Length: 180
Image (cartoon, rainbow, N blue to C red; front, side, top):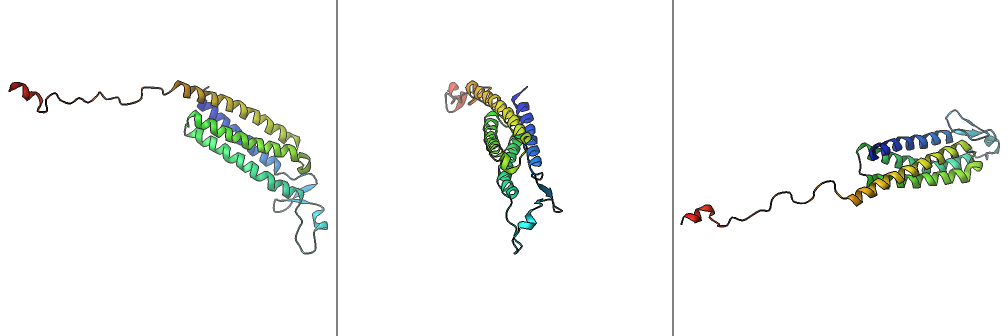
């Protein structure tokens, strides 16, 4: 399998894993239901809301506020990998992009691990993200190894000026100087 096909298959799987995790994470948290406008609502929030009509922020809102930027950053970096794959970017660039994606994915995993109980995130999400991250690390190793080999090998063909060296005529008047 070539490095381009590895990068392409990785880009697609990375985007799918992050998107799937995001879709599952948008489901209502335990004790909540989806309201008519699609947002998660708690059965007890209305009873505890102040009379002024301003609702207190729920734990789900706080979790979502922290989770969404992390997920969006991972998705953005996954799309950059996909774009690089589509335009057949060199392995050096792909290595950097996958490394950046790996960092974003790590941040997402750390959040999910540390907030799983508070935010009611199912363990399946954590397992799915960790499995995807293992694939990311494997791909990062492979692509960066190819990039390193290409740097060591140098260019594929000759470089430099391919035209023969320009020579000045022996006599500025050309061959006519011989006949004098």
